[in-house]
Image: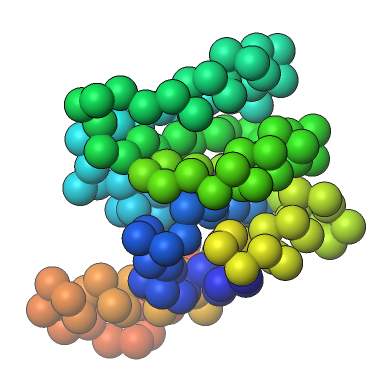
Length: 164
């Protein structure tokens, strides 16, 4: 399922256990990942690089599939993912595991990417693109931030800030 980056609040962590974030806006992706996981215990969050997973596939699958008596849920973040990991992800997806949230952080993916098309087509998967900020989005963010802090400033000054 495809979700726009401004619709992040639609993600339901109770139902959606596989999330793909891709694109060039690393800051926004990292902020979104932090917001999704900020209420979780740090012991429940495990971060992997794709290279490690590909070199140690069996160890990774064992750590995903086994569950401790003390942990209710496990969050796995995979950084720098590419199409090479699609087979491992589809294997985990087919097991239909509860209590596991997998967040995949990837660079820009082409439309023909197997990883991207897998996440776009599956119903229990979420796919979110993060494009670089434009002057319009930066201006909107600045306006919302200043309004939230109850700081009055003219639109011309906000435009000046966003241009810088």
